[in-house]
Length: 478
Image (cartoon, rainbow, N blue to C red):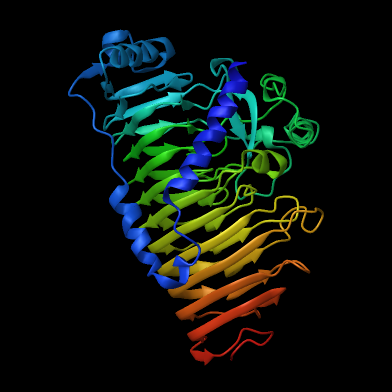
């Protein structure tokens, strides 16, 4: 019954969030869309906490790198919440812990010189209601988790270390083609069987309380997951070696990520995956990841359609992306849709970054993706294409749900070394539509753009290898 009520709350929350802030469709043409971005920034307010401090060492924590401090940290958080809120302080030292569960009105502050080091023992992560690759289930707790909390924060100049490595967590992925050793060898257990079972459960609408995984199923927990929370700040900390996705807000409103330094080249080490969020500011962050740096999501396949809550009103600015599959990505767990995503003044540069701007979807996901506005994007080097719109991702056309991607506006993107300008591949009967490139330049281009099932591609003052082009076809300007 509790989980059934949670799902009703979750659906009700998402519907209300979607109705509260979306502009009418005709406003796309009638108004300057960047006014909406300014409104997102204006509404992004960090939570404010009472001036009380609860030092975890006063609750028995020891920063010796070996003492397990889970209970001491939980005690400090409970005392802080009971007092009406404040700051839980992790002072300088090396503090080993299991799962950390935040409560309303609590700021977890990891001070300079402090490391919060997370245990590699799965038993330290109790079963909770969570989302995994866009599907609800009962699984290991995220390393840092909050459920239906208001006014929470993770701050400081210290380090959060998930201890993902070839020895711990990462081998659960199974076969993977990353750039680092991740530990799996043929014959070792991995996630593939349980992943397939979970996906089928969702398609069959098996109640979530019966989708119980955890021990023996090898579905890695994400690092930080606020779930159905409001007023969330994550600022300043260094995040290292997540078992899975790094920062994964789900069905949250008013989320700020600021000044984060996220690093980890393990399997699916996405930097941040806003999933069915409404109102999010991502600024001054650095991403160097083993998968997409930023991936906007809204649920996978039947589960995403069942909840039907889009991600919307997201502003990304002044961020740096290094290694990863995509820099600024939408999808592929995107069945609930996405709209009104903005990015500006970002720097993307690595030979191991596949795409700077990436959209990925297919006919099993479906979903309406519209109104994406990017400007002043500085691309040093990408390995495959500067821009990709892909409806053939994974299962491709093997489904009956029409993916829609429309109204993508990219202004003043400058790429110094891009193998391709554009790889845009819709599906027969489901074209990508209304892509506009304005005042963009692409150098170092050695392969032709791929433009299939794509309609109304507009180029205004676009230069490729120093020459102005009127269309992107199979030729590469000399």
